[in-house]
Image (tube, rainbow, N blue to C red; front, side, top):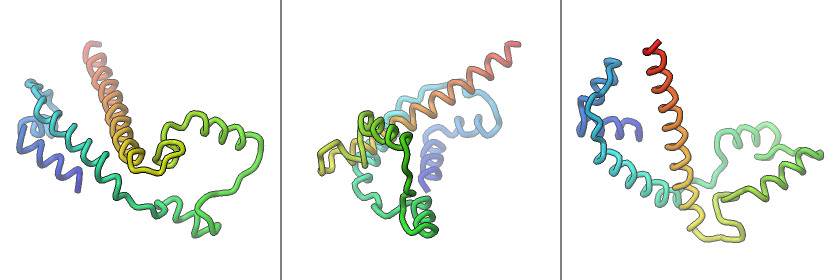
Length: 140
């Protein structure tokens, strides 16, 4: 539903952008300020606001593990597990979607926003690498 809403909005604002993408053509006019601003605001609202209403029920993987072994987390022992737990305790910025020693909603909203930023950053990096590779491939 979210993807359909995004594509519909982009098509209404810049139909030639979608047409160019569908025909595997380069889009010549890249004045996307309005689109970027709109997506930034919507991302902040969704990540910072709707994340407060996210389900606390186990996700699909946790649910299936619980159905097989009776608990949502697999038990493990050993020195590597201990080392990784200590490392995670030291480096975790938002453990359990909240700030350390905090029970408020600020950490949940921050987790949603940071997650969105990480996703956009990752996808932007992948897009940049793909675009760069295409440019390099065309020059050869």
